[in-house]
Length: 275
Length: 262
Image (tube, rainbow over the protein chains, first blue to last red):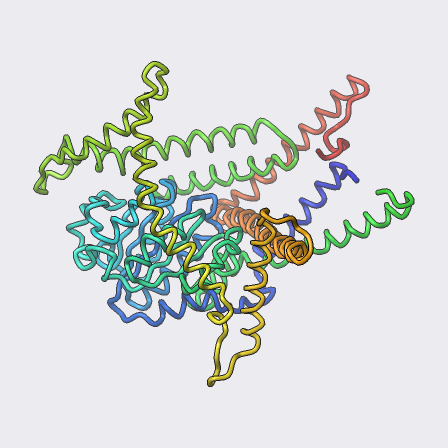
């Protein structure tokens, strides 16, 4: 069974309407009730004492931005509201530096936090394994300057937290690729700090085994988890709005599948058993 | 001035987004322009970023030049070794001396193997095997086992074992091994189904992300989304009409709307 071009265009149009209409005429399809995996990250951040330091690894690039950027912003909002010090780093690819820097500065400015004192975004370094091991031992050695070109050894936040091992209370890796595994093996396990992760919906099933084994204490998967975190920090933003579109598109896809199967079976019956 | 640049930048981004989406109609010059711009600009940005944040501060700034004159600085000649190894990687482009690149590769592979073996064993094998045992996953409430967690723990154990048996080829898949392997196939299919469902969700999220940009950021700035979309539709309609006219002149042709999907 081959779709004609206009039938294909009709499907595109229906999906486009399902995505755009909830964004234009904002309404809530259903609430994003937080799951246990997302609560794992939220409860850990919420349980930290003001003045503690946490690390957020911005290990994604523009291709995963729609899913992971809202997660990053919700997490930053939570950490800054709790008066935590936040160190950002990107060990995935150079294109993630701009995204991380913008999110840190946007949320930091909004909540009145000082760049270099309350938070810092270090930028990108290649060779993930070597970089993670070096961060555990001496931040200034591997990141001589931060993403804005400032000497890291002179920044108050790095003077307070010269290395990850023994100094940070939590690490969350927002991963578009295979960065969670090295962070567990070379960062959190030898460094002795707990770790959570956020990933794209595609990787969620892959990383679930690490949540089940307790190697990470929370796991956020895709736009849905970002919307749940926004719900938890009581600041509905991009992810919550996006999930309305997402929910309608899912319902539409289920209808497409049912309709396609009915058409397929009807065609087969008409042709006497051969589709 | 910065606001004006941002305004123009968002118009350009909205236009490029619509150009990319125009591929849904069919391949066209606007899509190709946006595609080439994307590849060119992202590569240029990454090259600049690698130079500015890695080569300059981590090699040149450590060995040759003091990039921060206010700081005390001593040349660290140890960094010449990785710098040299990095440079000889480029010898692959000259066939006569391409063999030199093997030194750098040997160093990377040797270092990698040495560093990776230990943590891989403890983190990815032992910890994961331990987490598979049912007793580890059973939760207790007031000393009594929580029955849903018991079912869950047994399910994890059975699913993992049956999947491993499916990939165990030392014995023929007959009898109990055959039945267990068959169960393993079902487990794999369910896992692939879950991954596929998540993949669909992720792809829709990407479209939602761009749609959100068009509605929330482009539209408030001079109705960029509405104007550019109208312009795009007009161009598509004109192109379609011109195509139809050409078809009439060449009998036997079909318009894209009549062509079957590939």
